Length: 103
Image (cartoon, rainbow, N blue to C red; front, top):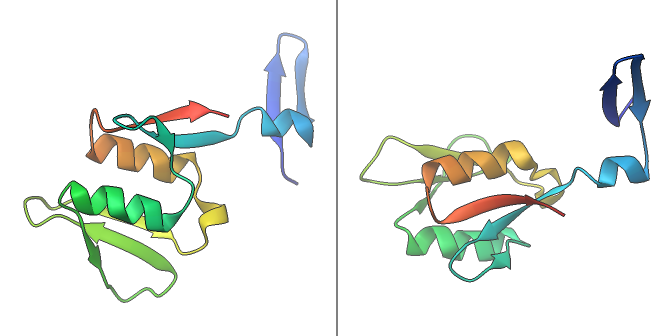
């Protein structure tokens, strides 16, 4: 069962289909104003910020780390599973560089 639960005074219901697409998010690189549309473009942006690919034990993840911190960014290998949770993780670890917006 996928969709968005909408809560109102008189109850709640599951919204499916087009209603769910209203809540889709996109990661924006603030300096260029461009939306991140692939891992290759994201990797280039992160590398320019000092992040490096980390080749860990989990082949299902793309991971990035910085030598200057203990932070680790872990992303699902499948870009279609790159959801707002991962986007906000990137925003928190790179303040004033990225922003998450509704589509």
